[in-house]
Amino acid sequence: MSGTSLTVSILGTGRVGIHLATALLQQGHKVILGSRSPEEATARWTGPTMPILSLAAAASAAPLVVNALPGEQALTVLSGLETALAGRVLLDVANATTRTEGGLTLLYPGSSLAERLQLALPETRVVKSLNTMMYRVMTDPQGQAMPPTVFLAGNDDGAKQAVRELLGALGWPPEWQLDLGDVTAARGTEALFLVVPSLVQILGFVPFSVSVTQAKTSGLEPMNS
Image (spheres, one colour):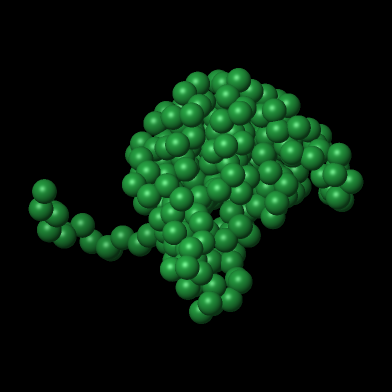
């Protein structure tokens, strides 16, 4: 367990939400799970004791809330929780895509789910992170063959610091965390999801992630503006 005990609400009971909840509970952190069908989710849950509440109740129960809802549904669902999410940090780990005849495409081209959430939830501090990797890497970055990179994008430095603490609890050292700037940077990280179908076809459904490497020397020519 990390040095500080965290209280985190996770919205969504799919693979990502359950995986994150299990990892944090095992480390002794307090987790509240939010579900659109809390009674059904409670009946399915076989892990350590944990409150499983409605989405609105869970959203208002912790200072840090994780959006682990399906990306294509998240904006509609979370827009209805504006009051419950006011004053909270919202960590958005989802990717909003849709399937067309041509393959996987972004649901919000020229924008991002994180940006749309920030516009819809002006009293909530949205941070995009953990969306460029298979879900198992979120809680086991040390298990990769080389150090992976986890990106952060958001408008509020305090909110990003809260997310950094959560990342640390999940096993991400500070040097593997890369702050890309404000929430518009989420456009780039969400677009990376478009390569996933090709990677799965080649690698199989195995834990993989993005890793940013830097030159060993700093004597490179600066990029032209």
